[in-house]
Length: 333
Ligand code: TRP
Image (cartoon, rainbow, N blue to C red; front, side, top):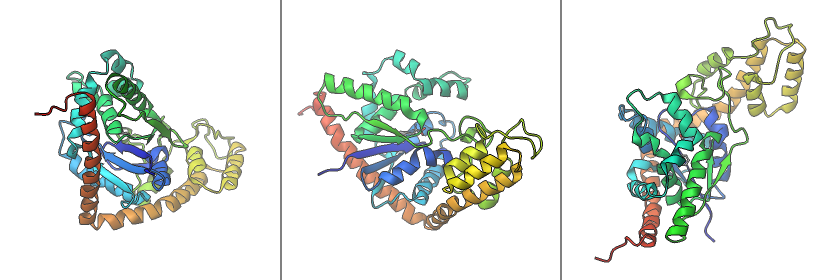
């Protein structure tokens, strides 16, 4: 029996952080034995808002690959695929563009939010505006059943499902309607207490950060602004230090005991942060070690990327042959 497939991906605009881990990487690692997994390093998508600095991509493709290997994605089981090296994706995107209305793109909440945030001063590029369609190609060319992603990506999966339904009804049933899988912690707040970790907001702890960097980030974390002295009763809800402890400290009793003392004004921020630093260090140390090990073998990492991309492209080519036949554009000349 053939296994069901996973396709997911990341834009290579920088290394990955704890938010990526709990939102998606953890699920990918957990499911790598059960699903045939392809992970797309989405450099073409990254270009849609970085086209003025394409030179950033190459180094970041490598960083992202290191993060994948560091968290325990096994290249014997999982294929890492570089998007720009699968030109079939571009072709499928063009065909999909006929199946999507401008009004649908206009309603996409994640796209709307990003357009606002990025503040394109020279006007909104068509490439950026249409990236949800290109992402639908990413997912469907692999006939993915499951897409492990952070919560912000749900509208992209919904867009993909709509396209698949239209395509299959209009032409032939060749595409698979994908389902999203969001991590246990859908959205990890930033160290500044903001809604999410985001590179552009500078509120991240990266998977490869050295201990001193993690320590500094933790010690300067936002906590409870209403609490001026360690003897003041503190708030645990909405306090990112406790959110992180909930997520990363496997000793739940210890967390409850700290929360109790915090609420009663019997523990200072510094002590709680010290505890969080130790918890994160235990979590990050093996990841950092694996990351450094692969970083010292760049040829091995390149080989993994080339091999993953080769296998991924073969899948894409098979799907495209079926797509062209279904669309009756597989001309016998
Ligand atoms: N949009 C995703 C992000 O910003 C990256 C991505 C590209 C992706 N193609 C994908 C995610 C396909 C899931 C499936 O992180």
